[in-house]
Amino acid sequence: MRIRSDRPSFMQPLHTDEHRGRSPSTQVERAILRAQDLVDTVSTSRQERFWSGRQGTAAALIGINKELGVQFYAVPDEAAQDIQAANEALGGKQVVIDVQTHYVADRDLSTAPNLINMYRAAMPSWWNGLEGLTAYNFAEYLRCVFIETETAVAVLSSSPGVEEFRQLYNEEIAATRRLLEELGGRGRLLNHSVVDPTRGGELDQMGRWVEELAPVAWKVYTLGEANTDPNAYGPDLTWRELMPGKWTKGWMLDDDNLGSDFLDRVSELARVGGPRIVCAHKGISGLIDTGSPRDVGPAARAYPDLKFVVYHSGYEITEKEEGPYSEQEADIGTNRLVKTLRQNGMGPGGNVFAELGSTWFLATTRPREAAHVLGKLLLSVGEDNVLWGTDSMWYGPTQQLIDAFRAFQIPVDMQEEFGYPALTDTIKQNILSNNAARLYGIDIAEARRNADNDDLTSIKEAVAYYRQHGSPG
Picture (cartoon, rainbow, N blue to C red):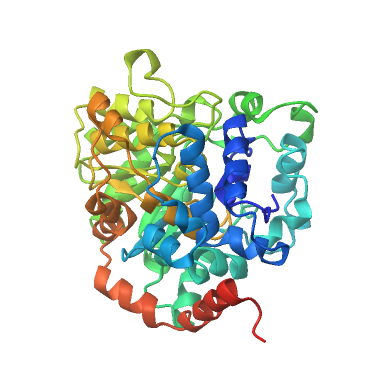
């Protein structure tokens, strides 16, 4: 998982706890070579700072354009050589709200045999350094999400886990928000509470969580629980083979029992001040059935008083790139979200939102796929219902993803052929902040003031100096 210093993070096979890193394609490797040819004058001592900065991002995006022969990213060649040109091409004045962020509590992992057994047994080539798992701690989170990025507000969540054996439990998520507020980052962090309806008593605890933890949304993982018995996995099992057969207690939002019981409880608590937002992990599942978003349409239609945020937008990691929606491929990736909304009469601007965490990271080097994914989502849920998320801190500082998104454009020929909208500055601003601000009741002007003036700012300025000049001398 170590981030290489000779290319931007989005051109590396990085992974989260939910997916294996995608090996760079021949196309990506050629794009990297083209990018490196643009900057062969960069000294060895400056390589790491260059590639982790804005000029490195520009060089990589230019390399992708040149390799594909299409201007997917609006970046001029001089942006690879000149920092001012890079700032003009990739910078922006939008407030950035990241609705999907994570970190791992640095408690002693030796006391968490379920978590460790799963990683060790199921993903030996994926998590090849378990001792490094605690590097994804709160300090690193601050660096990747706030200090080295423009993110003004973030939403902190957690992956599911068995009892105390999880990345963060709900009390830790809320305590992180409180700590950041006490340290001066007021309004910079919002928190989820994670709910697993299959575990006895969690629905009853939701009332206490509302009162004590003040979540802005409920987070659910319908996939279920991973089998943590090492004997359940073969030595050569791939993640794709693992997912369908080794997960238990999966459920769906439109189940007559678990799903409806959970959503009824959300509605009940919403009437007394609880959040009306349900964030459901859908996609990045190895195509396991309960990871599909096919339940979103029926649930959203049955509970119009609630808002459903589809994390990852149903995107799946496959060798074949996603194309336009078709009935023949309606059961693949984000097409499944498009299909369920169509089947249930859910149009743009409704109570379903599509979130881009990991999806944008994985599609950045496959820009034609990215154009199809974004185009389909904008047509299906509308430009007011697509949300910016990164799934960080798994991919390092989020700024390169922000910059790449700002520069991205859907080519005119794809707009004309498939009816996709152009990615205007207004649409990008909606995705990067306005939509999340409306959903979570965030004052954009206040968020900007806080991000520009709180106690994190001086640290951020010091980091920016180092990125440009190196160690002070």
